[in-house]
Amino acid sequence: MSETTTTTFVEVQTLAGRVRGAWRGEPGSAEASAAFLGLPFAEPPIGDLRFAAPVPKAPWEGVLDTLEFGATAQRGDPGVTLIPEPSVPGTSTLNVNVFTPAPTAPAAGTGLPVLVWIHGGGYFAGSPASPWYDGRRFNRDGVVTVTISYRLGFDGFGWIEDAPSNRGVRDWMLALEWVQKNIAAFGGDPARVTIAGQSAGGGAVQTLLGMEAAQHLFSSVYSISGATADVTLPRAEKFGRDLAATLGVVPTRAGFGSLSEQQILDAQAAATKMTAESFSSVIADGLALGPIVDGELIARKTTESFAKGVGADKPLVIGATDDEFSMVFSDAAKKMRWIPKSFMLRKLGMPKGAMKPYLAANADVAKKGTARIGGRFLTDLMFRKSLVETVAQRGDAPTWVYRFSWPSGVYAFAEHCIDVPFFFDCIDSPVAMSPLTGPNPPQALADDVHGGAVAFITNGDPGWPAYTAATRQTRVFDTPSSVVTDGYKSVRPLR
Image (tube, rainbow, N blue to C red; front, side, top):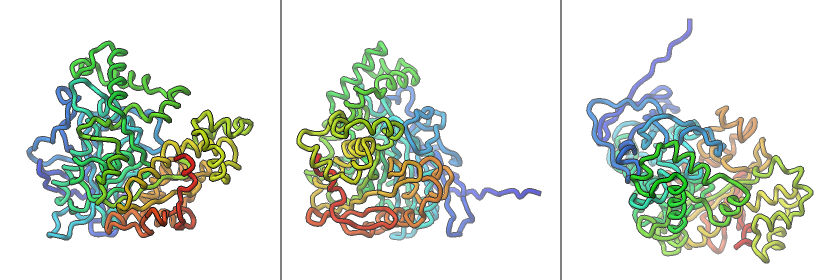
């Protein structure tokens, strides 16, 4: 006779109404975690609200079941993310998922620290419903975890003549406001909120860190493989007008609103399709869709804000993998061995005068072939160069820097996204082992990465020396992990 499992439900009162979640694991046990999934923080962004700023969710009567992930802004898998991020159909796409070990309002001063996770996906893909983003291991270690959704692509970041800019950014902010007002009911401390994200999510938290309007919404930041978009207003406007012309409408809310969601998605995909020419444009100018420097919500480039001292009171952990984009050339590695390294690097945009010092600083990678040094150069251009600039512009602000260097069992180098399951300590999940880490990823490394994150979220210090201009101390996550001086010195010839 097969055993039946009984779900233990738990209810929490939010400001908008009561919600029902479910326990995973025996309540009171070390691994117990209550999950509240698909909890709406805003009204569905459809109809008159489609290209509007997000509107807080209206109160409801009775008890709202939050037992399954809510609808996602991602429609189908566009095939650009290495992380399993499922799409969920539906219109109520602005929701949060809360994972907590203690879903009751705490006594004053006893609330648990909070992690708010913003997913990546190039600002046009991704989903908060990934099994990698489950907060149960952070819950085990005393951290309430929230994953948030936001509008993607043109709906979230496209320029429209009479629509508010940066709608996706406004979604982040409203979700964080929801956390401020409601997280205490789930056992969290609204005064100890760390925002974190990877890839576009890592760029998102840096954008928020550089925004005067967002400073009250969080207390610290953890940026994983992040690069800010900082799309210029002229570029955003040109993209919006061109897209409208392609679709045969005027570039207004009414014009774009007359089109189906799929029509805009198809046109967006065609306009952002990666070709040799557009790839060079992305390297030089960044993404076409993402947070816009509109002079209002986002006043200036993020690094310029850091230089002005915005966010200087907020502790920041920032880092990247060693070879974020080296996998781009993996399949062509054998053919590329006949291409001179200098020729490839020039084609990819090596600055004049930087070739010799760059090859010297990366000699260990260069000797592995043209594909590897080309991939390292792309990684530096798109991620690690901006990281070095961000840290420099932060000056004396409390900053900790790391590199993730462990070579995966799939690519034999530390590729984009590989550090995420270590951060969430979910490397024992089959969906984490198969696509990126390979078999038997080292638990000791997960203990290092996850443990440092827990320490930072809890105490404001990840457990290795803070970065200063004099010491440039850098944590290198590997087997074993270590601390080195100036861990990003190989990037400096590009500055």
